[in-house]
Length: 327
Ligand SMILES: [Zn+2]
Ligand SMILES: [Zn+2]
Image 1 (cartoon, rainbow, N blue to C red):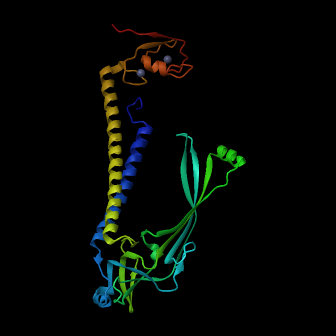
Image 2: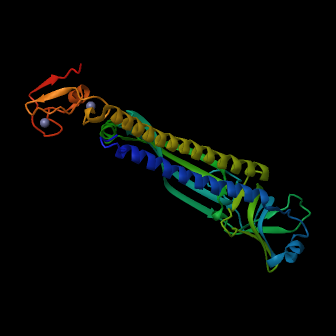
Image 3: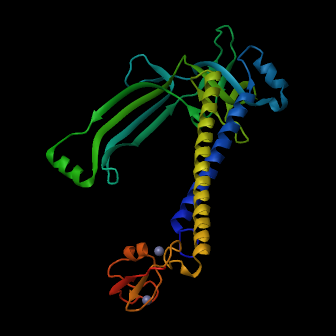
């Protein structure tokens, strides 16, 4: 706290940062819980023989937010896994992650870090078909890469460790960064996988399509069941809510502390009147500085003055200090 009773820059910074962070976390929580609520309200549509008829009777031949569950069927020649035999899919994502250990100067520990250095996703057009083989109707999934939840199956994973040598080790010690190696991953959405897709269902000419929805709704393409997907969205929203709450409590705590310090210093100032130390404003003036003769500070503040000690009022060098005793 400053001598004039105002909050210090650090306290205001803490208060400002925690309030801004609370607002940010709360807005994420609001968005996530709205998405979970919209998912719960979405129309459940099953892939059946009369799906076209149902859509042609709907306004605009579309269902703005629909949930469909079906089996992945490739509409063209499917993609083959580059690592696993007889593994066919409609989406394939190859990722190279560089793993390093970075020296933290504050905690004096090596921390694990990873960075994506390369990622490529291949897709072929695909449909969702009914679990019942007797139903011929299929739904074409449009722009699957726009999906918010795209949990692909990991079909291959390999870690390539970095080459170690003495010269490298010295270089890493000096730079504070030690490479561990590269993780290579292949993930796929396989032909025959059961998928829950949530988006805008449209009858376009004679084809049924699922597209990214409008009005800020989230597009989902997940291997989970609808219930599991909904539960995951709710859990995610709740976690953001708890984070926002914790951050809000910290902001309130910081505000209460600033106000309490301010009140305490004001009360001390009122109690001491003109006798309050000019530095801390909370204790009685208790020493005379020689040779300027100023009586302006308490003993603790005198001891805390940086060397060489100078009078806080006139900046004259303090050669000697005499304690004052009020009786
Ligand atoms: Zn003082
Ligand atoms: Zn002085």
